[in-house]
Length: 427
Image (cartoon, rainbow, N blue to C red):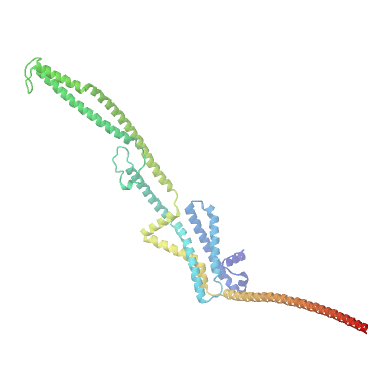
């Protein structure tokens, strides 16, 4: 098991086990380097596990597979970075390569550091967030109460900060109140007119009575008995009573007062219902706001951490200290490789690379030579086939020429024989 664990750690460091056997003194160094890679990967997994737990609120055991997958990804990335640093390189190239790898490690370290920092400050951050949420809920409830007054309360609901906080609680009491105000005005006018006419009738009746009783005064004759003046004043009083219709108006006033009482009762009922409805809506809005604050997400904790950092220099110091620590911790594999410098294993890696290059070049040349030889052989065979074909054509040409020569000779002999026969005949 110890041997397997060591080989696994050296594999994480990108070490070729066949080469490390030749420099056994370097095993401990590269085993430790692999341990650093494994530690960084485990810290990265813990960071993701903490961040995922903060974001989702799920029990951490269910998120463990995702954390292990992230650990494997980080370990593979660190292995890639370190593997590229094995061997000896020129100083300039090695520096540029190291800077690029350090940059990648720093970015990865920042990604890993922030969730861990939030996890460490979680209790304090949650307290700050809950306090801020409680203040927001209190302000919301106060503003809703101010911008949605109960019926009968005198509040300024047209303020600019009430535009988004007005709740619809029904307008029945408003309409009833308008009708009630109008009816009150009618009742008041009716009462005032009726009282005025009653006073006028009473004054006229008193004047007629005084005239009939012989009471002296302004506009009175002072003569006792039912004389012309007495009858005139009585007639004027009766005529005024008939024209003013006081009894009918009294009945009308009683009807208006009855309607007024009924409308006042309806208004009180509507106000009670609207008060209950507005109070319920305010309570529901506040409850929904509280329910939306059940979970605390990652961004809220980041904002709370920024708020705490701006309020406390100590929190800022600890925050940056943890951030730098985790960034350096994630950069440890690359930094450790740079600190170690060139080792015997690096020399073997360079030799193997050169040997592999030479072997690959020789193999390539051999393959090229083999291919060229095959093509040359094919060309030679083509030349031989062409020569055989040419010889065959020449032979056929010669045979044809020979055949034609024989035909000519036969024809000449025939001609000679024919010529000889003709000469003998002539003789």
